[in-house]
Length: 222
Image 1 (cartoon, rainbow, N blue to C red):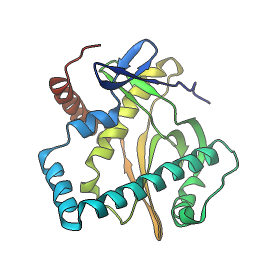
Image 2 (cartoon, one colour):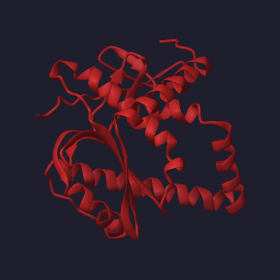
Image 3 (cartoon, helix red, strand yellow):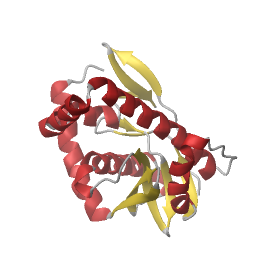
């Protein structure tokens, strides 16, 4: 089964970037999460930047962002059964992720837009059957392995995607079995974090709280 792929248009409303889709204008999931990032997380990021220097921190961030964007493009091509072209500097990340990609039975949707009437738009990297389970997936890259407690916002992100997927495609009867967060590493096998339905429900409740906080900070004007 393939899911219809929707695209969202980026627009500015009162100097805010929002996404317009199917007659609605909503903020993106990542915007919601970055705007409502807890104070302790902001403090940790600030202290890291101060510790290594602003220029070095920016260089690391830019390098990671570039690698992540380009890797996403190749993963999307692979899932669409198109040709991939892996540059040498991405070789380690690709080899890290390839065993996971080879366990994907079917990709129902690759990088499509979804939305939820709670007030957000999301862009899941994939909706796919992985190891026999229908899941929403988010691909990440990292310079070093992460602990589960460090990826709280990733969990909220996929939970928001899962809810939106089931709402947008309700007519298909789709029911998500879980979510996969896969983190590619340059010199090691990719990390995988699986969220079952209980995990997704907990993360969904937490995301709704963050969404409420967002709309307190950024009241709806559209």
